[in-house]
Image (cartoon, rainbow, N blue to C red; front, side, top):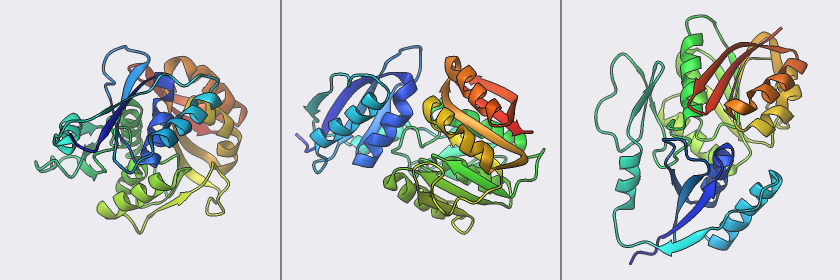
Length: 288
């Protein structure tokens, strides 16, 4: 037997991105089957020997409590000897989204010449671009590129930094990437260097819009997080967005879109486009 352990728990789809962040910060590798209509989704976490399973469970409990839900039962088992990295790689093939080709280090085929290559950390299922919300954001960025000339961009809740990287590849801009988790900030910085945009993409740790590096106004604000923090951050987003500036919001289920949109309309924004990907929705907004 190996020293790795496998934890499983059923997570509502609306909490998957947040549960992903907790697991990544703890040092776990995650996997979830996002195909089909299952809700909740079984989240599988591969735990290295040094990871304290009790601490991970406590962190997940805090997350679920914050959203008014009890922590689902978490099962833990030892894993047999196996090339688990290869298993993760098989579950995360390269993909195309809009003008982008997203791939991990394990992909050996050359990127298509007509797409913009983004190489990201392959072991992070949601930060890799495979989540529908991220794909929707990449598609909206691709649509915006020929229409607007953007120079100052903020990525709130950057995760692996994939959206910040995409923006830096589309425009000669500067991007500030923000995340509440130090591990995500570290990964975003590494991915910026890997993709040759480290001089234009700055990643910092912050709980929302509190960091002194965040300086308005921005031409575009990206926020691929969850419905509840999107609603809470709406006034801040409105204050930090330039007149005529754009916002791409994601990480929300289609049934949550009305509440998210209402909060941002109150902050002076209006809907330009809504894009559905399965049960998830991405919103493109403009400040009046």
